[in-house]
Amino acid sequence: MLSVMLLLLVYVAMTPEVDDTVTNVKLGVIASIGAFCVFGMLQFRDSLLLRPHPALWRVVLSFGVVYQLFLVFLLFQNKHDARLLFKYIDPALGVPLPEKSYGDACELTYDNIVDQTLDVFVLAHAVGWFCKALILRDYTFCWILSVMFEVMEYSLSHQLNNFDECWWDHWILDVLVCNWLGIYLGVKTCEYFEMKQYSWQGLAEIPTLKGKMKRTMQQFTPKSWTKFEWDSTKSFKSYATVIFILTMFLICELNAFYLKTLLWLPPAHPINIARIFSYFMFGIPGVREAYQYLHDPQCKRFGPQAWLLIGCIATEVLIVAKFGRDEFPNPAPANVLYFWAGFLTLLTVYPIYQFWLLPKLQERRIRKKLE
Image (tube, rainbow, N blue to C red; front, side, top):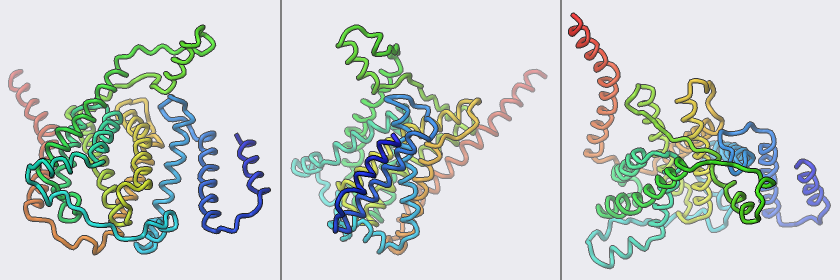
């Protein structure tokens, strides 16, 4: 691999120079990222995932490092320069986005329903929740996230216009149709991998061409499957873990909307699509490593993919906080503040009762019975 990489660089060095500065800079950046990913593919340590090949997940980790470095660089820029930076990537960027609200026509008419249903983001919802189900491997988790994201849209609609949707768009089209379909298919896929009998043979051991082709396709499926059992009510550690992971997922989703608004990136732009796909690839090994660390007593070290995933999400939050100053002047409605005050109080009171008061009460009852 080192020889191949150096030969490619020799070819670049020997080819005639291009006078287009923008092209040279873009190609140089892409080549630098590629060289770093090649190094990471060969030198980084393996993830817990082995299929289709450990090298793929080492490349994912390498690209995650590149993305984190880019986020840190972006954090040190001001908002104006950050928007101009994306204009160098695509000259069409760097202009304010047109405001769009989905809550202007909420009558249940045929035209309104068709207009909302035929939106390209309807399919994106279903595909997105299919991917989340593959990452979390838990039906209840996904449903909680699905409902909570709609609650977040209600809570933040005073800041982002595209969170202002019709009630039936929130709860029927999103939650009960698109999200449910994606979650259902994703969970069924997880159940298939969980029940599947895994028997791996080398290609040389398979006599027929059909068998060899089938084995080649199986290389892109898991070598084995671990069912996630989060046990959120078993201990305070499990409860806190579940709350933390769900919060990270919600923040990651919200970051997508705030970043595209603040950096003037159209929703369907390839940069946004690449970010979403990257987080899907980061999330598969990241959540798997987090689960291993939190549930396996033999695992003494937080995995690099999980570490980097949290770092990227947190750095995006800092970028949103910095660039969002004076961008959202509308105060939160009183009912939103009351709801979150009550909800956070409930999240705090429940573990106190479940993991501290209840065990003491049960211990007292046992003592009384013994007396």
